[in-house]
Length: 319
Picture 1 (cartoon, rainbow, N blue to C red):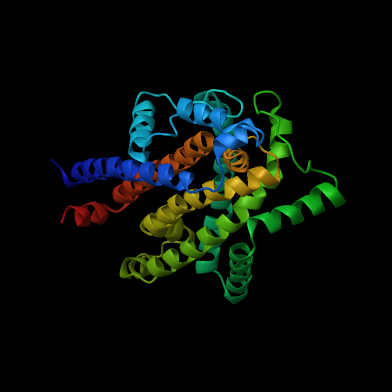
Picture 2: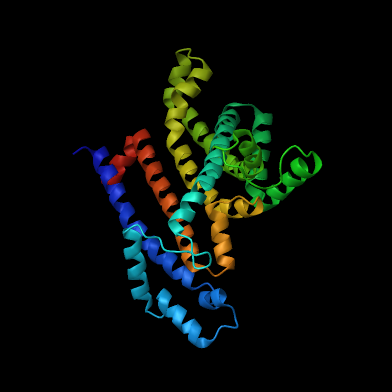
């Protein structure tokens, strides 16, 4: 069996215990949230008998181990449970909310890559004023909180210029143009910070590769700088850039919770925030579990791409 195939199998198998540990952490953390979900559902005028009866119906009077075993068993059978406030199926709620979160994070990462990678190459190969200009963008993007940037964008583009809506959502299938108008400010809010991280990593990786002997050899052969950069340097600089993009997807999913709430987008992040406010622990559990699972899968795909770009990673993992 080749080292590459061994690397893929080992990395896939490692994902299973990671998912198991993550499910335990999510289950326990949600139960540390202050407040009684049964009291929240019934109201504070409910009698102790009513509270005890509903707690028994929900299985909350059982031990944590029994609750976790039953919850995990239901998950493995595809039963995500029921929202204890709206009594809606959590599987249906996730199916309604996930496309919005996927669209937000996907468009944000696409825009961040389109900004960060070219600017990173420009910073690594350009003159002094270009380096200073891009460094200013990096400092701005990394230091500005998403919620502050989002509020400023709303004030400028929705309040002053009145060219974009401040909040809301229209499905792409219903009206593509309106969908893009509503998604513009949330996507820009998330993409600026991520573009700064990608720019910094690309600049560092390209600068490192440009100093290698093979680049000097290509220059001596008279190959144009553009062909050297885009034909040879970027391929060798790819692994750290792909790695930081994979990591930043997780950051985007975390930032989506704030941005979806700020711009009233009906995604998984807003579902989690609403669930926390209502002490609706089944919904919060499933929402956090979905976000964490997506991050673990993205990390797996990122590692496989890095192993494909740089076979030394797969060789190193096998030793």
